[in-house]
Image (tube, rainbow, N blue to C red; front, top):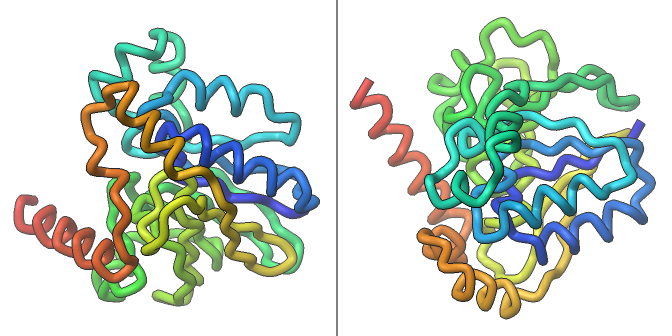
Length: 230
Protein backbone atom coordinates (compact mmCIF):
# COMPACT_ATOMS: atom_id res chain seq x y z
CA UNK A 1 0.00 0.00 0.00
CA UNK A 2 1.45 3.31 -1.15
CA UNK A 3 -0.53 6.44 -0.42
CA UNK A 4 -0.15 9.86 -2.00
CA UNK A 5 -1.11 12.67 0.38
CA UNK A 6 -2.43 15.70 -1.53
CA UNK A 7 -3.25 18.57 0.81
CA UNK A 8 -4.31 22.20 0.50
CA UNK A 9 -5.16 22.18 -3.20
CA UNK A 10 -7.02 25.48 -2.77
CA UNK A 11 -8.83 25.52 -6.09
CA UNK A 12 -5.62 25.55 -8.15
CA UNK A 13 -6.30 23.31 -11.14
CA UNK A 14 -2.92 23.67 -12.91
CA UNK A 15 -1.12 22.59 -9.74
CA UNK A 16 -3.52 19.71 -9.16
CA UNK A 17 -3.15 18.51 -12.75
CA UNK A 18 0.62 18.47 -12.29
CA UNK A 19 0.45 16.56 -9.02
CA UNK A 20 -2.05 14.02 -10.35
CA UNK A 21 0.07 13.37 -13.45
CA UNK A 22 3.06 12.62 -11.24
CA UNK A 23 0.99 10.50 -8.85
CA UNK A 24 -0.29 8.42 -11.79
CA UNK A 25 3.25 7.22 -12.50
CA UNK A 26 4.26 6.71 -8.86
CA UNK A 27 2.57 3.37 -8.28
CA UNK A 28 0.25 4.48 -5.49
CA UNK A 29 -2.78 2.50 -4.37
CA UNK A 30 -4.78 5.39 -2.92
CA UNK A 31 -4.79 9.17 -2.56
CA UNK A 32 -5.66 11.00 0.64
CA UNK A 33 -7.19 14.39 -0.10
CA UNK A 34 -6.18 16.25 3.04
CA UNK A 35 -8.54 19.19 3.20
CA UNK A 36 -8.87 22.77 1.92
CA UNK A 37 -9.73 21.50 -1.53
CA UNK A 38 -11.99 24.05 -3.17
CA UNK A 39 -11.16 27.35 -1.47
CA UNK A 40 -9.53 29.16 -4.37
CA UNK A 41 -10.26 30.50 -7.84
CA UNK A 42 -11.42 27.22 -9.44
CA UNK A 43 -13.58 25.41 -6.87
CA UNK A 44 -15.93 23.63 -9.26
CA UNK A 45 -13.20 22.66 -11.71
CA UNK A 46 -11.06 21.29 -8.88
CA UNK A 47 -13.80 19.02 -7.58
CA UNK A 48 -14.72 17.87 -11.09
CA UNK A 49 -11.09 16.97 -11.78
CA UNK A 50 -10.85 14.95 -8.58
CA UNK A 51 -14.13 13.19 -9.36
CA UNK A 52 -12.55 11.95 -12.61
CA UNK A 53 -9.53 10.33 -10.92
CA UNK A 54 -9.34 6.53 -11.26
CA UNK A 55 -7.17 5.95 -8.18
CA UNK A 56 -9.27 5.48 -5.00
CA UNK A 57 -9.60 8.70 -3.01
CA UNK A 58 -9.98 9.09 0.74
CA UNK A 59 -11.13 12.54 1.78
CA UNK A 60 -10.86 14.44 5.03
CA UNK A 61 -12.10 17.89 5.98
CA UNK A 62 -10.07 21.07 6.26
CA UNK A 63 -11.15 24.30 7.89
CA UNK A 64 -11.96 25.84 4.48
CA UNK A 65 -14.11 22.83 3.58
CA UNK A 66 -16.02 23.19 6.82
CA UNK A 67 -16.49 26.93 6.31
CA UNK A 68 -15.79 28.09 2.75
CA UNK A 69 -15.71 31.74 1.80
CA UNK A 70 -18.90 33.31 0.49
CA UNK A 71 -17.29 33.61 -2.97
CA UNK A 72 -16.59 29.87 -3.15
CA UNK A 73 -19.90 28.82 -1.62
CA UNK A 74 -21.78 30.85 -4.25
CA UNK A 75 -20.02 28.92 -7.03
CA UNK A 76 -20.55 25.46 -5.59
CA UNK A 77 -23.98 23.89 -5.57
CA UNK A 78 -25.54 23.32 -2.17
CA UNK A 79 -24.93 19.58 -2.38
CA UNK A 80 -21.19 20.05 -2.74
CA UNK A 81 -21.01 22.62 0.05
CA UNK A 82 -22.79 20.25 2.42
CA UNK A 83 -20.71 17.28 1.28
CA UNK A 84 -17.41 19.08 1.93
CA UNK A 85 -18.56 20.24 5.35
CA UNK A 86 -19.56 16.68 6.29
CA UNK A 87 -16.22 15.08 5.45
CA UNK A 88 -14.50 13.30 8.37
CA UNK A 89 -11.89 15.26 10.33
CA UNK A 90 -9.38 12.40 10.17
CA UNK A 91 -8.78 9.17 8.27
CA UNK A 92 -6.57 6.25 9.22
CA UNK A 93 -4.58 3.77 7.17
CA UNK A 94 -2.15 0.95 7.86
CA UNK A 95 0.84 1.64 5.61
CA UNK A 96 3.38 -1.17 5.13
CA UNK A 97 6.77 -0.04 6.30
CA UNK A 98 5.27 2.69 8.48
CA UNK A 99 2.42 1.05 10.36
CA UNK A 100 -0.79 2.82 11.41
CA UNK A 101 -0.97 6.42 10.17
CA UNK A 102 -3.45 9.12 11.16
CA UNK A 103 -4.21 11.74 8.50
CA UNK A 104 -5.68 15.07 9.61
CA UNK A 105 -5.70 18.69 8.46
CA UNK A 106 -4.39 20.88 11.29
CA UNK A 107 -3.97 18.27 13.99
CA UNK A 108 -5.98 15.26 15.20
CA UNK A 109 -7.63 17.64 17.65
CA UNK A 110 -8.72 20.44 15.31
CA UNK A 111 -8.57 21.37 11.64
CA UNK A 112 -7.42 24.86 12.72
CA UNK A 113 -4.51 23.83 14.95
CA UNK A 114 -1.23 25.37 13.81
CA UNK A 115 1.77 23.04 13.64
CA UNK A 116 4.96 24.14 11.90
CA UNK A 117 8.52 22.88 11.78
CA UNK A 118 9.39 25.22 14.66
CA UNK A 119 6.29 24.91 16.87
CA UNK A 120 7.03 24.50 20.56
CA UNK A 121 6.65 20.79 21.43
CA UNK A 122 4.85 21.76 24.63
CA UNK A 123 2.20 23.55 22.58
CA UNK A 124 1.84 20.68 20.11
CA UNK A 125 1.79 17.76 22.56
CA UNK A 126 -1.82 18.33 23.78
CA UNK A 127 -3.00 18.14 20.16
CA UNK A 128 -1.81 14.53 20.12
CA UNK A 129 -3.48 13.41 23.34
CA UNK A 130 -5.12 10.02 22.90
CA UNK A 131 -3.71 9.47 19.41
CA UNK A 132 -2.55 5.86 19.14
CA UNK A 133 -0.89 6.11 15.72
CA UNK A 134 2.83 6.84 15.88
CA UNK A 135 2.72 8.76 12.59
CA UNK A 136 0.47 11.76 12.01
CA UNK A 137 0.23 13.44 8.60
CA UNK A 138 -1.16 16.97 8.40
CA UNK A 139 -1.25 20.07 6.24
CA UNK A 140 -2.81 23.51 6.94
CA UNK A 141 0.52 25.39 7.24
CA UNK A 142 1.53 24.72 3.62
CA UNK A 143 5.17 23.70 4.18
CA UNK A 144 6.58 20.17 4.16
CA UNK A 145 8.34 19.02 7.32
CA UNK A 146 9.14 15.82 9.19
CA UNK A 147 9.72 16.06 12.96
CA UNK A 148 9.08 14.24 16.24
CA UNK A 149 6.91 15.48 19.09
CA UNK A 150 5.70 13.59 22.18
CA UNK A 151 6.57 10.17 20.77
CA UNK A 152 4.88 10.83 17.42
CA UNK A 153 6.38 11.43 14.00
CA UNK A 154 4.67 14.47 12.52
CA UNK A 155 4.74 14.88 8.74
CA UNK A 156 3.40 17.85 6.85
CA UNK A 157 2.54 16.72 3.33
CA UNK A 158 2.95 20.22 1.88
CA UNK A 159 0.49 22.19 -0.23
CA UNK A 160 -0.42 21.34 -3.80
CA UNK A 161 -2.03 24.63 -4.72
CA UNK A 162 -0.79 27.26 -2.24
CA UNK A 163 2.74 26.22 -1.17
CA UNK A 164 4.90 28.48 0.97
CA UNK A 165 8.30 27.06 0.12
CA UNK A 166 9.99 29.95 -1.59
CA UNK A 167 9.45 28.87 -5.20
CA UNK A 168 6.76 29.60 -7.76
CA UNK A 169 5.16 27.01 -9.98
CA UNK A 170 5.65 23.87 -7.91
CA UNK A 171 3.03 21.70 -6.22
CA UNK A 172 4.20 19.95 -3.04
CA UNK A 173 2.83 16.60 -1.85
CA UNK A 174 4.07 13.40 -0.20
CA UNK A 175 4.04 9.64 -0.77
CA UNK A 176 3.89 7.24 2.18
CA UNK A 177 4.92 3.62 1.96
CA UNK A 178 7.22 1.95 2.62
CA UNK A 179 9.01 5.19 3.62
CA UNK A 180 8.15 8.88 3.52
CA UNK A 181 8.86 10.59 0.20
CA UNK A 182 8.32 14.36 -0.03
CA UNK A 183 7.61 15.20 -3.67
CA UNK A 184 6.98 18.25 -5.82
CA UNK A 185 5.92 18.75 -9.42
CA UNK A 186 6.07 21.76 -11.73
CA UNK A 187 3.05 23.68 -13.01
CA UNK A 188 2.59 26.85 -15.05
CA UNK A 189 2.62 29.68 -12.51
CA UNK A 190 1.90 32.31 -15.17
CA UNK A 191 -1.20 30.43 -16.31
CA UNK A 192 -2.42 30.22 -12.74
CA UNK A 193 -1.78 33.95 -12.20
CA UNK A 194 -4.02 34.61 -15.22
CA UNK A 195 -6.70 32.40 -13.71
CA UNK A 196 -6.54 34.35 -10.45
CA UNK A 197 -7.02 37.63 -12.31
CA UNK A 198 -9.76 36.39 -14.64
CA UNK A 199 -11.91 34.76 -11.97
CA UNK A 200 -11.78 37.68 -9.57
CA UNK A 201 -11.06 35.46 -6.57
CA UNK A 202 -11.10 37.92 -3.62
CA UNK A 203 -7.92 36.73 -1.88
CA UNK A 204 -5.17 36.56 -4.53
CA UNK A 205 -2.60 37.58 -1.92
CA UNK A 206 -2.94 34.17 -0.27
CA UNK A 207 -1.18 32.68 -3.30
CA UNK A 208 1.87 34.95 -3.17
CA UNK A 209 5.18 33.09 -2.87
CA UNK A 210 6.61 33.02 0.66
CA UNK A 211 9.64 31.31 2.12
CA UNK A 212 9.10 28.44 4.53
CA UNK A 213 10.70 30.49 7.31
CA UNK A 214 8.46 33.52 6.77
CA UNK A 215 5.36 31.33 6.56
CA UNK A 216 6.28 29.51 9.77
CA UNK A 217 6.65 32.80 11.64
CA UNK A 218 3.30 34.05 10.36
CA UNK A 219 1.57 30.84 11.40
CA UNK A 220 3.27 30.87 14.79
CA UNK A 221 2.02 34.43 15.31
CA UNK A 222 -1.44 33.19 14.33
CA UNK A 223 -1.17 30.50 17.00
CA UNK A 224 -0.11 33.08 19.59
CA UNK A 225 -3.06 35.28 18.64
CA UNK A 226 -5.44 32.31 18.90
CA UNK A 227 -4.09 31.47 22.36
CA UNK A 228 -4.43 35.06 23.51
CA UNK A 229 -8.02 35.20 22.32
CA UNK A 230 -9.11 31.91 23.89
